[in-house]
Length: 431
Image (cartoon, rainbow, N blue to C red; front, side, top):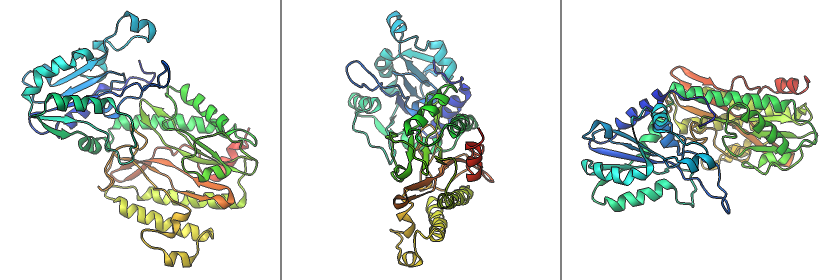
């Protein structure tokens, strides 16, 4: 059983209802859990459930299959869950797997079969359907060289039933998953609270000659004792010049007196991600220049956060954040007015020191699914993470909060995580 507190199955019942409303009449949709990926010899990586299957069922176990068939002739076939059958050997070596009753309690689905019965059951109902919805990873930033369980099964199903009409589930899930249910918001908030505890812990720990990986170790300790499985993504603990490498994950250098350490690390909770970045002076006090750059980034963060509201388009948002950042870089004398006058839309002057996007969707995945070409809506959760990176000064500052868009504005889900430069200095020097 997962270590997080049970989630109300009303969430998953509602998610399935919403999904079914987008299907064509006479459709069946099929979802597969992720594989447990091998390492070497008989080793395996930890299990991470397929986000779409979890979203629709709440089942956090390998070898799970979900079939949704709203127009099935028999009531019992409208929703079917297949789970791994347990036995004495599995119970002794791996621990108990879910019983059928437990699977029903978690998911709200009453028809449960064992996974090995999938092909036989599918054969009895598939010819009642005209359309088969198959799922796939359509994330724009995906880079996958291995074949997933979903890919493998998609091939088989298309081979077995070549005369059906096939549709994609992903566009429906991009739309649905981008608007968070109140239960989901509570889970993301819980991940943020655990992240806050870890950050407050390391503020008391960071000092000259502490190693980056020691900071990582302090954080994972706090995550685990608060029912998190761990980091929501590979943690970046980057001191000095390392902070100018956007995806620095080696975390293997000492933090030197006079440097700033960038911490981009956050907890997951119940498969939901949080995503935090904070910057901390190793000595407990920022230099005048470090504080100047820090406060510029903080100003951009606050202004950019205000722009995250219903109806805002990403194009307009990114242009506005770029304008605010340009003003700050001029004040910091990092770019000149001449450079700004010569800039082109493709190559704005600010990109020299702020080269990544400001916001992405957040949810079951750190870079969650959603459509960047559609206006923002209430219920969406975004990161907001401007940064200024100055390799020649051994300084990289990025600050990041998680923002929930509401009907009348936004809520910062990380408002209790210290971010003001003075507060960070005060907390570092209070023990």
